[in-house]
Image (cartoon, rainbow, N blue to C red; front, side, top):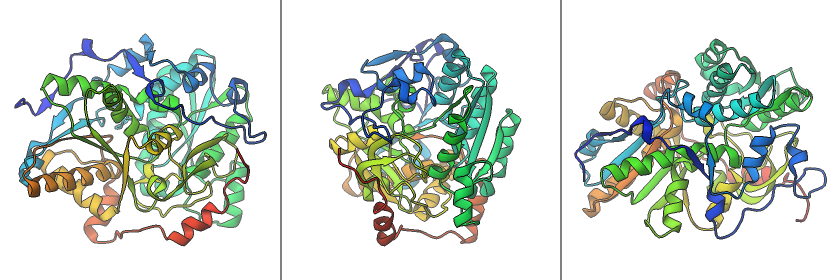
Length: 454
C-alpha cells in the first residue's frame, strides 16, 4: 500500500486502445431493431445519423480498438487524468477504508464527456460531415461536443434540456464560446419540440425530447450527422480509457478495488470506469463488486422495465432493449441534469441482467450533503451527477468503520461543479427536496411502450 495521495501516469503510459466489453461477455447483447420493421438494423439503417467508422465500432466484436493518433494528440491536453486517494475524506469519516477517485474534471470541458466527443468529432470530420447535432442535459456533453467540433472544424448545434438551460446559463455560454448554436429544448425549431410545447408550453424538457429534436434536424440534412454523449456502445467504448488508466494507476500503488461505485444516467461514465475492471473480473483476476448509482427521481435500472423502447420521446430512433421508464417519461427537474434520462445503455442493461453489476438509487439531498463533505475535505467541488457515487462511497466507508473492515473503494469523479453553484445555493438555502418518482407515474409511462413481439 502506497502513501501517495495523487497517482499520475507518464504521458507515454497513456493507453492507445479502447476496450470493448462485448468481446468478453458470456452472452451477446440483444440486437438493435428498426423502428418500422422491428428487424435488426444494419449499417445502411444507421448511416443517416452516424459515420461508418462509428457504426463499425457500435457493432464490433473486437476486444480492442486502436485510438487514432489525431485523437491521442488532443487527449494529451488532459490525459492521463489523475487518480487521487481521498485521505482527508477518510479521516473525516474515521474509516479504515481507502477511497480512490479518478478525476475527469481536468478536461477542457470539465468532464469525462470529452473522451467520446473528441472521437466522434474526429470520425465525422474524416468522412466530410459539415455539422453535428446533439442534445445535452446538464450541459457537460454539449460543452464537450462544442469543444471537440472546434478542434476539427465541424459546426455544432445543441438542444439543451430546458430545466438545465435555465439552471446553468454559463454552460450555454461555454458552448457558444466554442462556436456552437444552442437551443432550449423543447424548442420551436423542430416539429418534435413544437409538438411537446403544444401540449405543455411550460415543459421542463427531458433528454428524450432533446434527442428527438437533434435527430430530426440531422436526419433532414445530408451533410449533417447526429452525435450522442451516452447510451450507445461506441460511446461507452471511448470512455474505457478511464478504467484502463485507473487499472495502471492502482497497480502502480499496489491496490485492487473491492468495490466500484459510479453515477449512472445513460451509462458512459459508469461503463468507462468499470468495464476494464469487469474484464479482469471475468478473467479471474479480481473479485470486485461493481455498483451503479442513479437518482431516485429517474430510477431506470432499479425501477424500469427491461424491454425494447425508443431512445427518444418522438420515436425516431431505433428500438433498443434496455431498462426504461418509458420513452415519454418526464422526470422531475432535479439538479443532476445528466442523470435525467428515461433509459439505460443497452450494454449496461444487458450486463445488469447478467448479474455482473448491481444498482442502487439515491435522493438528491443525501447526494448534495456528500458533495459538500467531499469539497470541504478534498477541495474539488463535484458536479451534482458524481455526488451520487460519492454518497455511495461514504455509505460504504461508514459500513467499513462499523465492521472494522479495510476495503479499497474506487469511483470516478466525472466532472466538476463550477457551473452548478445555483444548485448548491438552493441546497444551502434549504430549497431542495427529495423526490422519489411515484410508482403510479412509472406504471403510466410504461403503458406507452412500443407494442410488438420480438
